[in-house]
Length: 171
Image (tube, rainbow, N blue to C red; front, side):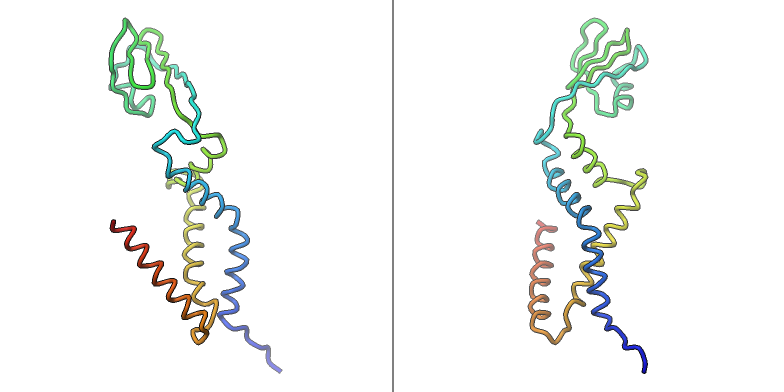
C-alpha cells in the first residue's frame, strides 16, 4: 500500500501555525515598537539626558553638526561658548554639552531594531520577518478550501482590508 499524500492546504496550515508560534515574540516587539514610534516626534515616554562630548577645540557651528550628529544652529556666543538649541560648545576646551530626550533602554533597542537598515548587523532579521509576514498573508488563503463558506466570508474581509489600506495610503 502507498503512503497517503498530505494535502497542500494542510501543510500550509501547519507551517502557518508553527511559524506564528515561533515569531510571536518578535511580532509583539514590532507591534510595541511601532506604536512607540508613532510618538517619536513627542517626548512621550522619554527622559531628559545630558550628554557630554569631548571634541576638538575651535570648531565652528557648521563643523559641530556632523560631530554631534544633529543640526546645530548657533543662537548666540558668550565668550568662547557657542549656544545652540539643546546645548552648548566651549571652543576653548572642546566640551560640548547636549540635552537629549531618550526612550528607556529597552524601548530604544526595540526602536533601533525596528528601523534597522542594511548598515545594521541584524538587517537580515527584518527581511526574514517581512517575508514571514508576507507568507502569513498568502497562507491565510490556504487555510480553508474555496468551497467552504468561511473562505468566502474571509474574502469579503480581505477585500474590506485592502480597500481600507488603499484609503489610508492615499489620504
